[in-house]
Image 1 (tube, one colour):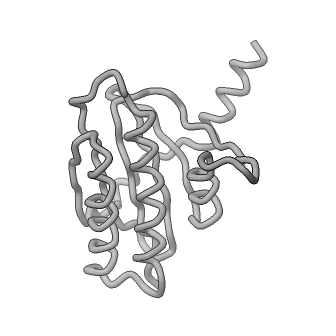
Image 2 (cartoon, helix red, strand yellow):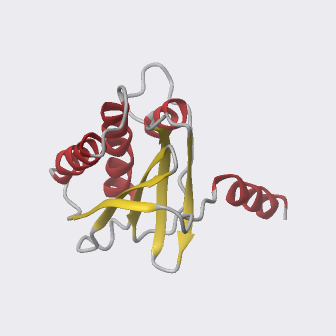
Length: 152
């Protein structure tokens, strides 16, 4: 029972529903292949640059998208290799929102990697560099998203 309450609290903390006022700026579907990470990374950076996101927002968005797409490819539905990953970039007032959707319903887990571990830092990087981040379950899988202050 205690575990169910904890999962419910996590769901409340990280759940985000796209605002109807969200302006979609771009969307890209990528195959579940490691080489697709570079394409998704460039896509997010280019959308942020094209829409004149300020300062280092395009570079930070690129890094964070890379982390989320890598996680989607590594952990999102490995048993369904044909399921693509969708990357969406949108704008809500001053916030750039990037959303990475995969077909897996497993909830992402934030963890702190040890000093000698070579993986396990992706979500910690997303948490540290984004204005807000989280995940949303839906009937077709989950979306993991982040927001950056991109426009004054």
